[in-house]
Length: 110
Length: 112
Image (cartoon, rainbow over all chains, first blue to last red; front, side, top):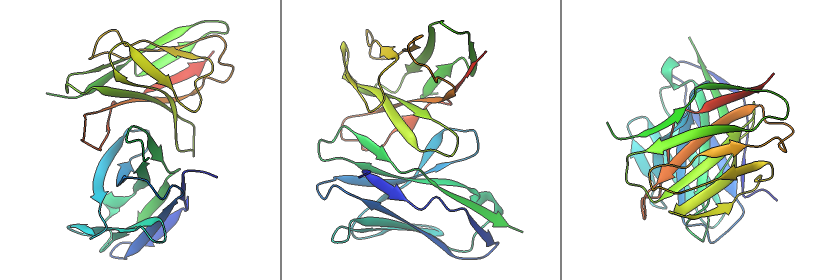
């Protein structure tokens, strides 16, 4: 079983739409959770951390559900510039291994 | 500026040849990582190092080797034993209790 599972998409949404991605993880002792963004042929960059209490940054909201072992990312009022691949990342219980999901592809259409 | 640099941006390997990818960071991070990314795939861990002169195998270490002689540097050698080396290679680093990884711009390796 993979440590982290993501729906690869692709998600094609019109500008202004709200879109949500989910990611499940297998190790209930996982410590930390993040969303990264990766543009085409570029390196991943940290988008935001994910906390049990939720984390909001402008149009982006991240949530963690420990009971069901999933994290989510909500993007409101999608912009063309949001088009990218979004990777969920989980740090294992040893604290030194980062587990990446395969990424969810988002294309925002004019 | 602080950050991670990787070189070269593109690298071509001939059959039977070993090639070395460079990764340097000036973030004073203890931990460094090498990942491989194939088209449409997630990142797979090749090797990681948490401290100078120590490194651990990741999920796909076969056909690769690393060294960590300096805190700032973590070069990756793709040996001739790696039969399918064509991929995008990403180096990353993280600090203690930082919880996030910072990536270099990557090296694309192609086989001639």
